[in-house]
Length: 259
Image 1 (spheres, one colour):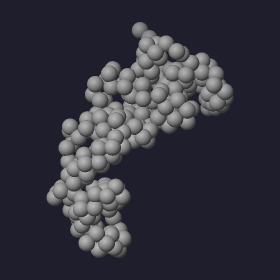
Image 2 (tube, rainbow, N blue to C red):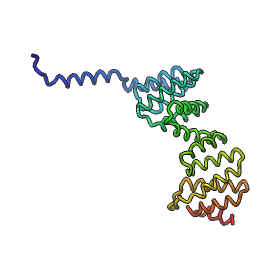
Image 3 (cartoon, one colour):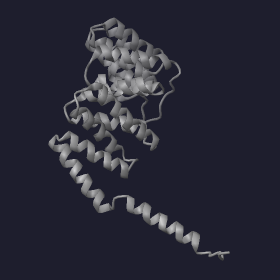
Image 4 (tube, rainbow, N blue to C red):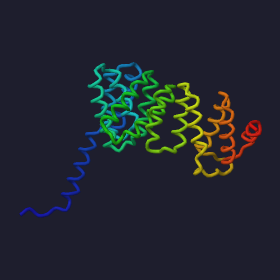
């Protein structure tokens, strides 16, 4: 019988660790791949960029930026949407499996797409993600709402604001977005009605000096907009409500001028 050697297990573990380390790129290799990826991406060489960012994801699976660039490279290099979408969803699932925060990934894809001048990549990615992963629907709706506000698309802004209000009917941010959409579509009375809903919310508490709430900010914006379009009575009502929540010298002058 072979005698037990207490060094066998530690030695075997050390060999495994050495082999695992050898399978990963060194820091120098990693930096070289990253530089190549960035060059390909900047030059619009999308096939090579996608390949390089795929290697970087293998080595650093929690890096949000690598996924974002791989997703945008995929969209830029292939005109076949089903293939693009399948590849992007594979990258999305890898990111989720690596515990990459989904909000961070969505924001990164948005930044890259807009920087490339192809914001539609972001829009399509979001809609595909929601269709593929229904649990992401509310996250995607919020992201699309912000996107359509940025793109100044009032019809889509109203649509997605209403979608968000389905779960939070009293949310002042979503109500304010709905009013902006209605105003952009020329529905002045609809916008005024929505802003009055914000002002009528009695659950908001006064804020400490030097601090404001999203509801207060929405009220001030609403009052100024209503005043500018001639709906002075509604503007005065909202201004007084905003002043009650957080009095400022500026609002005091506005409320006195509204008397």
